[in-house]
Image 1 (cartoon, rainbow, N blue to C red):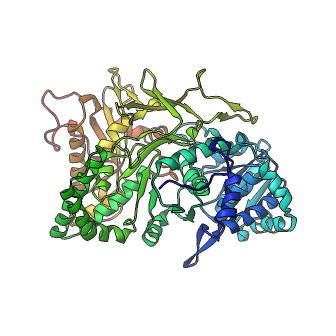
Image 2: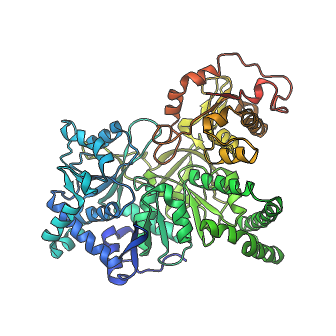
Image 3: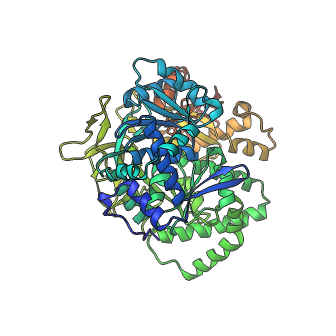
Length: 630
């Protein structure tokens, strides 16, 4: 069910502190926030959360933080981060979370652009990147607060800030401060990680976020006060909505997972009813399940595949809005109880009622894979600039492969070139300028160009096709969606990452990366020693399989979209090495620059299209791709 909790005002009039006040007054004994300490969980109730927030707000005020100013935060998903975010909002300040994987030059840009005087950091790793900025005359930064006291040195510690807040706290001043907050006031600034250029500061108000939270809640079917496993960075708009703002609206229970790599163990322990993952998370989970299935006896795999077929058939009826035949429902119920749930239970996925993804188009093969386990991933679409989702699939209306229909109060239309335009109360006012003003990004009629290309079907479902700036225009004048080609070739489980290139060229080439989890399992199942990825990428059997994968993908693409040559790389891409943004989006410019020589090498010899169909045999002819390693 969607929340039936009393709202302390109309959605457009709400502020975040008003929700916390309601929660403490009406749901004070319910669990609000939990985090790992040792072998167990430490939990705060909503009453305890508000008390700590009040003390912390006084501590930040004693440090000199004033209403309206930005305070930067670089910490993992730990209680000091979550509570500081709320405390600053109650003070009237604007918390700005910075990705922990940000490079020093990105940190310097954000510190300079935001004009923040205070930054709150986790420990030594963060301090090493921030301390030099205190001596930078172009950066207004004056004070650092460090959560790990042992790493703080001469800087303020989170503990001392809390202690000063306890000494100076005045309840009347705290209540007065948050009640002065207005819906049009800024709630946060989110710096988009960006696939090119410097991050942009997206200014979001209480009204933007409250409307987003209420409208999203109306589309999501969940029990009251459901737990949320919070593991994505708070610098990501999705986790800010799901891990801070929606829980306050629902008086829900947030479980903080400090290490994203530990989310699997948290899911296995907690058996959540809801789970959100970006596409790469779902891809990794699917790869892990496939690797386990490959080791099972044939008879057990056959039983699982039969259960998968039933689940997909049932999902198909739901997708088309049809009544599920009684015989199918009964067969699925037996298969779910006897085959699917016992296996899902091992992974902690057996109680899921709502599963979702966003930030990038979900590969359809991954969606269909999970549908075979009775897990319908409700894909959504939105941007930081739209306060989160614009469109969402929901149990009462979904189309697998689409990103759903618009949320209440949001308008969509397509420009002549297919770009998606949007307007409504959840769309931001503009980008933050260095002087603190806001630069509008809307046209004269209030439409915001999203940069995404898509189509709307007759039922109002949105289907994404590409990013406007990422469209490849070949030398023949043909437009190609790189995401379409990349997702097609990535449907083979061995291929974890891909980049297609061809702008201004006569044909497409690709850089491919083995899946770091599935490739070793695939090799072991075939008696190949599962060594480092570099060794696997050079193995003849792996190279032959990749060639077959490229040929199979090409057979499904038109001639312009087909990959004519490729290179198989030896290392996975990630945020730390720069090829992915912190939200796991591909930084195409970075990849092209880093591997420019390899890409150019794929064009060194002239390519002539064979007259006959070139993809019938994956081992013959250059059209099947060049299975070189690099």
